[in-house]
Amino acid sequence: MNYNKTVLDIFADKEIIKKADADKYLKFCESKGVSAGRVLMDEKAITEEQYATVIGEVMGMPFISLDNQFINKMAQGNTVTNGFIKKHRIIPVDVDENGILTVAVADPLNLSGINALNALIQKPKKYVVANPSKIDNYIASLFAAGATTSAIGDLQEQFGNTKEFDTVVQNDPVNAPAVRLADSIIREAIPLRASDIHIEPYENRVRVRYRIDGELSERFEFPINSYPAVLARYKIMSGINIAERRIPQDGRIAKVIDNIEYDFRVSTLPVSDGEKIVIRILDKNSFAFTRENLGFTPKENTLVNRFLEQPHGIILLTGPTGCGKTTTLYSFLQEINKPTVNIVTVEDPIEYTIEGINQVQVNNRAGLTFATSLRAILRQDPNIIMIGEMRDEETADIAIRAAITGHLVFSTLHTNDAPGSVARLLDMKIEPYLLADALVGVISQRLVKKLCPYCKEKVITGPTLTSSLGLDRPTEIYEPRGCRYCNYTGYKGRTAVHEVLSVDDNLKYAISERYPLDDIRRISVENGMVPLWDSGRNLVIEGVTSVSELLTITEKT
Image 1 (cartoon, helix red, strand yellow):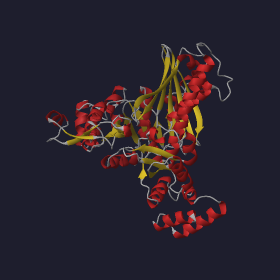
Image 2: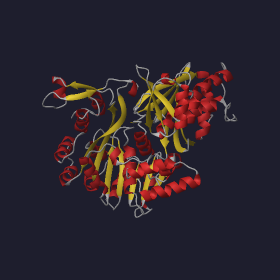
Image 3: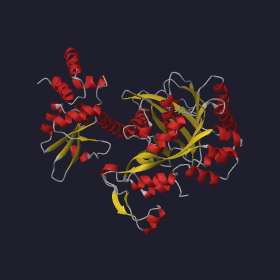
Image 4: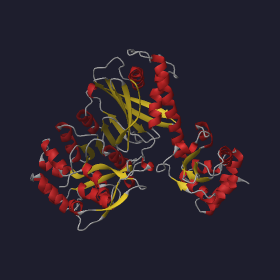
C-alpha cells in the first residue's frame, strides 16, 4: 500500500485539499522520502489536529483531547517504558473495569508502533488518536519529572548536610545536579501549562509550586541544604547578582526548549529562610490571542470594534494584577498593527515581543521612567501609544494630553470596575474637561475558572440563591464536583469576564461636570454597559462557571 497516496486521497476526497495539489504533494513525498502528513502540515494545508482527526476517523480511532483526558499511569504497567512511549508516540491512557486498555496515538498510520504495543501488552485495547503536540508535551513532562527526581537525589549525595556554599555552581558542568534540577523544574512546568513557578525556602525544605489556571498547586519539595546551589544557578542564568541577598532582584532568562523559544522573568525576594524565587513563563511563539478566545461577547465585540476604529483618544483596561489586562492589550495592538501606522509601547517589563511594534523597556535606575519614556515617544511621530500602566499623575497627564492631540493611547489602571477609572483619573488631578474629551472607553476584566465539562453537577437554585442572583424563579446551574479529568478540582481552564464602558455625549457631560461615581455608574448602565456581576452571572447560568467563582471576581452592586 502506498500510504502517502492513501493519505492524500483521503484529504482530497474530503475536499480539504485540491486533487491537483494532492498529485503535487505525492511527487514531492516520493522524491524526498517524507510522509504526506508531515508535508501537508509543513505547508499549512492542514493542521496537526485535522490530520489526527481525519486519519483517525478513517482508521476507526476516535479523537480525544489530552487536555481533558486523565492519564492513568497504572495503564502503562511495568512493561511500557518512557523510552517506548517517546519512540512510538503512543500513550496508554486508561484501563476500564473490564480490563480494556485505552491507547492514544499521535499517528494512526504508525502500524509498527501499534504492533509493538500489541506484542508488549496482550490485553484488549481501544485505540484513539490525539493531537501530536499534546502527546509530545506529555512525553516531555514524563522525562522532566524523572529528571527532577534524579537531580534531587544527586544533590543530596553531592552536598550531604552542607549548608553554606556561595559559588559552587559558577563553574559547574552542564550535568551538575543543581544545573539539572534548575532546568528540570522549568521543563516540568511547561507541559503542565503553568504560568508561574514558585520556589520557596523554609527551615528544613524547599517547596516548588506551579500556578496552573490561576491556582497554585504543590508539585514537589527538596531538602533545604541543596537550595543555595539551585538559587545560584538561577541567578547566574538570569544575570542577577549572585552575592546580593538583602534586596529583591529581577532578571530574565531566554531559553529554547523543544525547539520553542521561551522567556522567563525571574524575581527574587528575601524571606525569613532565604530567598524566594518566582519565575513567570512566557512563550515567545505562542502569542496568538484574539478577541474570539478572550471571552468577549458579541455585544462587547461591537463596542471594542468602535474603540479600535477611533483615530485618537484613550482606551483603558482595568482590573487587579494577574487578570489578563496586558494580554488583552497585546491582542488589540496585534489586531491594529499595520505597515501604515507607527505603534510604540512603554512597558515594565515587556512580556511579549510583537513584530512591527516598537517596544520600550522601562529602566528606573537609568532614569527611563514611564513619564520620561512617554515624552520621548511623542517625539517619535507615533500614531498609537501603549503605556503598560499609569502609575502616577505625571504619566496620566502626558497620556491624556497625547490622546487629545491626535494619538490613540492604550493603558491600564488598577480599579475595581470600569466607571471607577473616571474617579481614579480625577483623583490623579486630571482636569475633568480633558478627561471627558480624551476618554473613548474602559474595559474592566476578571478571570474565572471554567467548570470541568466531565464532572460539573447540575443543581437547582434555592430561594436564597435565586434571589441573590436576581432570578425570577429557581434555575438550573452547575457546581464543581471534581474528577480525575480535572485533578479533582472541579475546574478546567479559565475564561475572561468583561465590563465594557463606552463614553458617549451623556457620559462626557457627566465627567466634565464631576458627577459622583454612583451617577457615573448609573449613566453607564443606562447607556448599555453590562456590569461585571451581570456578565459573571450570565456565565453561571450558561454553565460555564460556578457561583463561588462569581463571588471571587466582584461584589454585587
